[in-house]
View 1 (cartoon, rainbow, N blue to C red):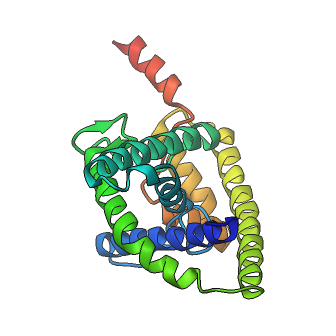
View 2 (cartoon, rainbow, N blue to C red):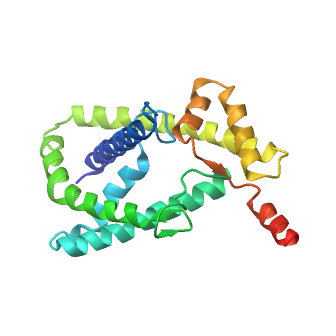
Length: 225
């Protein structure tokens, strides 16, 4: 696969991931929620996970069981690292599985890990071969036009979205509250008064929790004992 086809697959699976997230939240909250950090209808973590499985794990495709296990390990590691670094970068935890059974630091849980393995089987043996039969039929120059158009849109979306998230992080750090819940409420109140793009981030992750005061809270808890 060439870089253009890989990128198109990345966008496609990022869109499918977004669609799955939106559907789950629609069932949970009974309303549409535009999930993900980007403004567009994509969740890149799903695209990255799919491409990693298709490229790095292709040697395991002949053995469904090994593919299942390796996919669980790789995707769970990806989810854990994404949660960890996003919390470090933006002073907030965007998802928390602490209330789920068999979780690790609230960042990953067994339920999701099993889902990753099942999705990998569907992806490698059924979905991707089907999608490739259509994508590989796209000829030049339309392939290049599609590739560069989506690439430019994706880059612009990232720039705008990350500027909003950086503003989000700055808002957390400007807070004078010591309590995690108070900081979270403060940030929500500030962003809900801003423009649509800023509001969307709060609506996309209604259960986010700030972590900027975590160490201070632990110190206070230790001193009170």
